[in-house]
Amino acid sequence: MYRLLASLLLLCLLLSLTACGGKPRADAPPGGAPARDPAVPPEETDTKPALTGDEARRAAFAEILRTAHDQQVLPDGTVLDGNSIEGIEGNLFALHDVDGDGAAELILLWQNAMMAGQTEIVYGYDETAGEVRQELRDFPGIIFYENGAAEAPWSHNQGWAGDFWPYTLHRFQPETGAYENMGSVDAWDQIRVSNGFPRDVDADRDGMVYVLLSDNWDFTYHQDPASGEAYWYYEEPPVDGAEYLAWRDGIVEDAESLELSFVPLTAENIAGVLDVPYVELLTTLLPTPAG
Image (cartoon, rainbow, N blue to C red; front, top):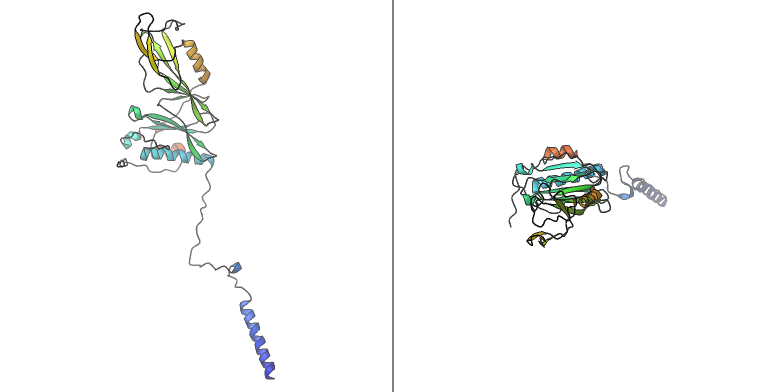
């Protein structure tokens, strides 16, 4: 009798233990993972949508302009000439498809500086790489053409050309994503300098000849065959107007020049032209680093 009662008690105990521990709680995580403490808020996840290609382009251009304004530094580390915020905001920028690739480029015109510090730069954006690229940098006053050509004036002339101002022609190359230097031209006006003027080259007898220059042009001494006097001029031989125009037309062709809308480098213009959030810019120059 006692053995039967003991067996019944043992069976009841086993059934009780199975009922308490065999079924998981409704709020217990699967696999035995610890339950989250309701007092601790869940971690926030970044739900901001990814930027489209055009949005990324405009954001990158805005960063270039803000850094140029506040720090006077370009993406490649070039330090810009800036003496005051008022002077810096006298520089200009524009957004325009100047190279003809179907997407707008940033054109930064840093003109409010000493002559040696003046520059005009074209920036494009590589959507595949997600980065800005410099397409062209030259002296301010560049004329852009609808076929991807660009005409950049020299900062100085040699004083022999009269009203003609020397310039360099560039042409955008889609394969490299940058402009290629196609050569430069200067001129010789007989009225300005008659000694040594090559009358035999001046076929149209207008008193003007031209010199087509490559990247590595240089000067040398020449001697006037008529007077025997020496003069200092380009190594490259001069050409007449017809040859000069053939060179130019081979690059510019019959393309029309583009009209760009430049605006001052201010926070309001950066936000408005690029359609990006307004970001306050510095109102005083940063101190110059020691050393």
